[in-house]
Image (cartoon, rainbow, N blue to C red; front, side):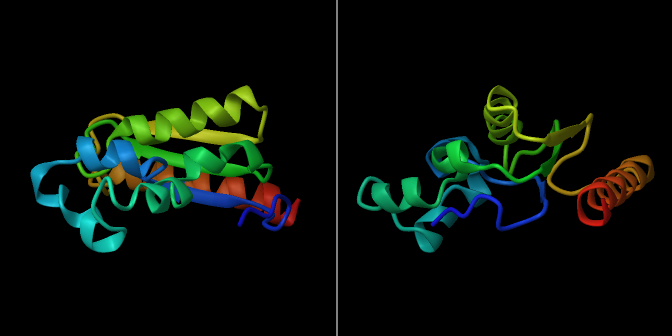
Length: 129
């Protein structure tokens, strides 16, 4: 269930927004992982829809910061791109940070520094006002 206004802010890094596309887009190692977590398709289609944030994005009202690497093969960038586009079109307060050359986790020291600096600034803005 969705509760707009419940959170003062959220932070999401390399997050999944659409389980359907993730099931077909992730690399081979993770390809069957969703079967054990959510169930196999097409049998679990209703659960995939229920648990995919993109299908509930119309109800997101709280500020959120998204972080994504361009080389993420576990959760491809289009997962964050689509959520950011929906937030932008609905004028939901958000930040979207994309790190060039990073995958599913930050490896470069400058990315780690930029990530924590951005998270700190974002949370101070929305939690401390």
